[in-house]
Figure 1 (cartoon, rainbow, N blue to C red):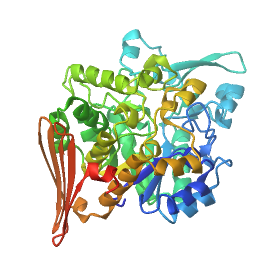
Figure 2: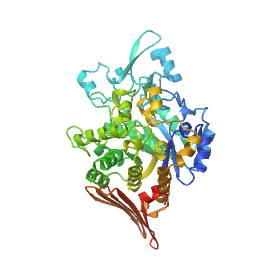
Figure 3: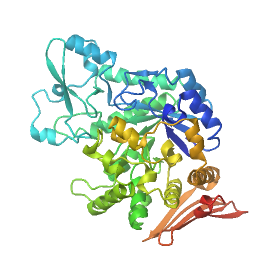
Length: 491
């Protein structure tokens, strides 16, 4: 993966149309900004119960937005990341419908996970209490077979996302088929979506157990042999992330978004500095994605301290709700239909009270943090919370999943904060310093982040007490000093 800024987007929600139009945007309006793009689920259908993360057919591009040929064409011009949805498939898939019709006589019976496959003698309350629940209801959904028999299927996320039995022969073949399809279509990276939930074992949490690590290793090896690398998507305790990073190609730095918000809202830089001294270097950095802002990534676990204390987390969540005018509160937890109760749903721009300078500082910190930066399309355009879409769907994450078109994109690109962010992206892409060694220091309100690579250096100095941030660049012959306030003013 090139060490340049990457884009995360839905093909249709950014372009207003599909994959060819996204390709055109990247080649024109967004030219020079991104060397790669993570295209969020483009499989059939893109508009299921979880915005494409519940595929009916994981090897079929939704014809409404394009084809595999369109994916191949885009992959010839930039690196593409696609989602391998590891944990589940749609209840509307032909395989699951056959299971409902044929029961245990179905050729696909072993593809899906039932409660009794993990708990053949039944599950005790103590066993069930060990299992984390991303949604407010339980882990199982009863489905009635054509015979009249009622069966409890595992549904970790929504009731219409049926968990796969990835340990079965059919489950493994299913995933291998998707990996081969990706490799044949110019895809360079696969994101292992919800892989931490894929392995279930009685008497455990059924999340990131020892067997899960083995399973992730197997999938990563399959991807590597097919010429691709993998990114593991897991929200978890920070020490777990560090351990996962040792075993895979790439992980997310999901701790960064709340830690940056904490710094900018409380002017306390220490937790951020402490984390970036030990954070995985083989990571993808984000501030926002199609999901919410993760909280468990900085929280404690089983009595062990987290990157933030519970008091700090409570203040951070309250600050997000206040900064967004209560919009995030309407979209998070039990207030809306959510598949993850451990996240706050809000655009990052709203989480910072639409303060242009603070938003640009947050992006500068992201770009100077170890790892390859990805920027979500809503973050690129500094979008505000989409309260109308939230009201229309009552899906919490939709507050940060706006539908745009070329006209809206063009208008957003003219905003001073977006122009300044685009300039910052180009600075990050063009400096050779970011391929070198990283240093960080900070105290209370002040932060200094530095990269050094031979004669090239890049340094970010932030002083929240003075509301100032400056980038210093050098290539050995010329020096440049850029105040972020200057970028916002068009300088």
